[in-house]
Length: 397
Image: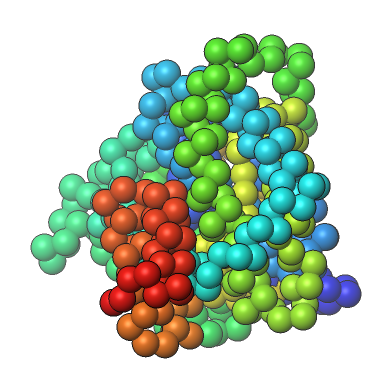
């Protein structure tokens, strides 16, 4: 069925699931370890998906801000829910200012080689993390006990958990172009079947609405200070590089004139508004990411119907199951999430195929190396300097 720019079929449904490998691990970590509201988080993810699809009229990803999410989870003993909500407000205000004032337009002066470096680096990180998830689940309370039990069960010298992931990877590539049995749909549904076979979630239906932050207590000055220096400032370069510049480039590459609404100003503004909403309803800091768009596209998404399908799913589990929604989502094997990450990463890495010659490949490869030993923020800054030095022939390679 098609309604204007929105198509609803099994292929769009499959495409809508393509980015779960990025979204769910960080979202679950912030819920289970940091104490972020599951209702607020999943409600805002669902709402942002639908509104982004309604505005941009193409598949538009919604992801956790990775630097904020990763650091918050790694430091969960000191990063409270209030600190995360404060980070959402700060990053939301900053992005909104960049979008409304037009300062974000300075992003157009970022060379193509730097954009490709961001895409190559993010794609590599996704692919590596996907392999890690396929080989073994994270050792944390995010993972149900049955998945750890599968690691101990050996079949032909490999753990049953890893075999499940390898089977999923083979299935995904065999079905990647199959429109009757779309790869991501088969993977995710099959994953849930495995999860439910080992463990039934304890949930009850009801109506659960997110609580405005004014009813539970605003972040303190200390929360804002911690959020600014530990979470927001390290996040901004990655957001500009991956969720604005690389996202703009990838959308235009995939959809051409259909992506006319995907401008630097629009991307900064929509992410700014979404994060203000996350602050108000106790969600997580969110962004659009080039890796997410690559994932949705690779698994079949071609219209904004993708956003409505996945957005409605997250709204439904938030409103109907409340905090119990976590117990349902946890049953999806991490090896299946690893397959989604692996394929999305490989797709994003191929964006460097339009580069030509040693000079153009040099910048992305250097950025990849810096990313692997440090982080994407430093890689982005270093890539900018290197690209302009090469452009004005201050150095030769």
